[in-house]
Image 1 (cartoon, rainbow, N blue to C red):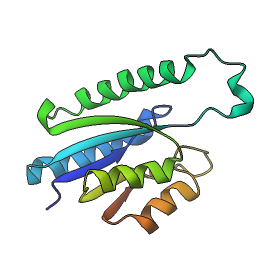
Image 2: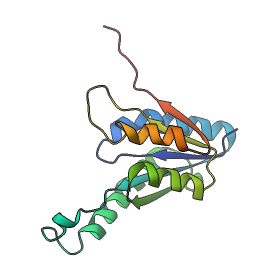
Image 3: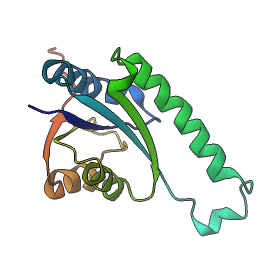
Length: 146
C-alpha cells in the first residue's frame, strides 16, 4: 500500500485540488499512511524584481505556508499524518524533487480543466507522470452528464 503520499496543491485554485486531496486522504487512511502537501511558488523574474518590495518572496512564502496549513487542517487527518511544504522554482521539477526527498510511494494530483490554463496544464503534469520514480495518480474532475 501507499504510505507516503505527495499531493501538489495550487493555492490559486484550491477547488481544483480537492478531488486529489480527498482521494489521497482516503488512501492514507486505508494504509495508515501520511500525506505531504506541496505548493510551488514561481521565482520572481529579474525584470520584475525592481517593481516589487524587497521582502516580496518572503511575504509570498508566508502567505503560501498559511494557506497550505489551512488545506492540511481541512483534510481531517491527525496532525502527525499530514505535513506541508512550500518550495520555489519550476513546478514539475520541484514536485519531482520533493517526491524523491520524501521517498514518496505515490503522487496524487488533479488534472487541469479542459480549456482552463491552470497550475497543472500542459507539460507540468506530463513531466511529473513521465519522470516520477513512484506511481502517479491523476484525478480528473467529475464529468456532469447533461
